[in-house]
Every structure is written in C-alpha cells, then in structure tokens.
Image 1 (tube, rainbow, N blue to C red):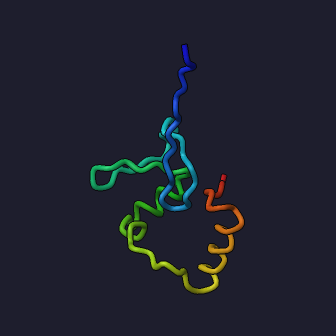
Image 2 (image 1 turned 90 degrees about the vertical axis):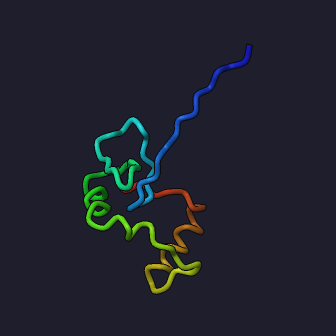
Length: 85
C-alpha cells in the first residue's frame, strides 16, 4: 500500500503576507463572511481598521522607492513570503 500523506494548508496574512497555519487561531478576523488569519495582533488591528485597503487593485508596476524596494526583494527571495516574527 502507498503512504498516506496529509497536506497542511497555510493561510496568507493579508497585511504582511506571512504564512499562517490554520491551527493558529490566536489572531483572526471575519469580514464579509470570510475568516482571515494574521501572524500578530498588530496585523489584525491594521486590517480591522480598513479591510478594503488590502483588497484594492494593484498596479502592475509599483511606484516610488518602496515599490522599487519590494520589487527587488521579491526578485531576491523568489516571491516567498517574509517572516516578520
């Protein structure tokens, strides 16, 4: 018989884009009938203040020094999420 494997699904924090395990339910927020998982209380509070900010359409090319920084960071890390904690 074959080996049974289980896939662990991860959620993405919509504020800092850190991966969050579904069993980590310390920081969640439900918005429009969907539950979002957060890595820390500060990310949850930022989302809670203005959830629509994190759903807006993003331009294809980020602008300004911060956009250039993020573009270089994504190129270096291969787009993997960063760990803030």
